Amino acid sequence: MQTEIPLVDFSPVLTDDPVGKIQVAADIYHACHGVGFLYLTNHGIPEEAIAAAFAQSQQFFALPLAEKQAIAWSSEVSNRGYIGLERERLDETQPGDLKEAFNLGREMDPAAIATADAALMQNRWPAQPADFRATLTQFFDACATAAAKIFRAFALALDMPEEFIVSHHTAQNYTLRLLHYPPMHVSPQPGQIRAGAHSDYGTLTLLFQDDVGGLEVLSAQGNWIAAPAIPGAVLINTGDLTERWSNGVFRSTRHRVSLPQGEQAQRDRYSIAFFCEPNADALISCLPTCQGPGHPPRYPPIAAGDYLLSRLQATY
Image (cartoon, rainbow, N blue to C red; front, side, top):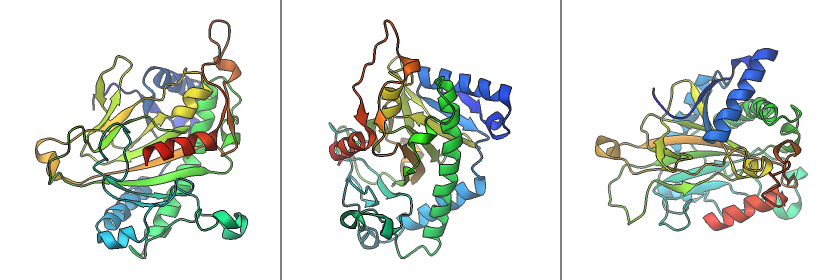
């Protein structure tokens, strides 16, 4: 499939091939500096785990609205639960997005959480489908394992110690998000699309999508380019905090899900995103390898948790 987004074979990292890892790091640098997106093949996440997660997602979104609203998202602090149609505006200047979502995070031991936050920080699980919790918890863990390996390759790409990015993600402050874009049975409002143009907020995102299409990425030249599903590949993009860390060397690229046309307008679209955020107290400041004479730091240091909270408050 033709696309302007680079395709990177991750297998040398999984096999710990020293020479191959250098090439992977170079390929990541090229993709993240030029586009901010890349397709990763041989990523190590089992295809059957991806398929099982999509199957559970479809069953969940088919539930009656009242059952989904019973576990509705309620707080930027936890960012967990069900988000109904048009509840979120990823482009803050436009009407609400034509999608619904379900967010979950790492399973937390209530005894290990401060009393005031214990209820907020629990995942809000539906009573059905029966295998929903087990399937998605396992998928979360598979994505987290893959992300740690990807972080090491990204650190090498930025000429930093291999464990640098991993060391700032020990809390696994990640969000697994199921997304459903219903068929277009009504006319949208002016400016309304399936997901408004936005950049992601954290370190990087792993995206799994079906074959319906609609995802578009803003190129460095200012053109919207298609980012279709490629069998066997996960789509990865860098977020705002990576752009800040890298002093703009790696781009946090705006992207959107456009309105479907023709027969596609009558199809449901499903995708699953795994958002990686650093530890809340991680101070994001310009890396020493990304600054120098003529290239001073562009962004002031900021705590990762403060930045995420500010972006979620604006979005909702």
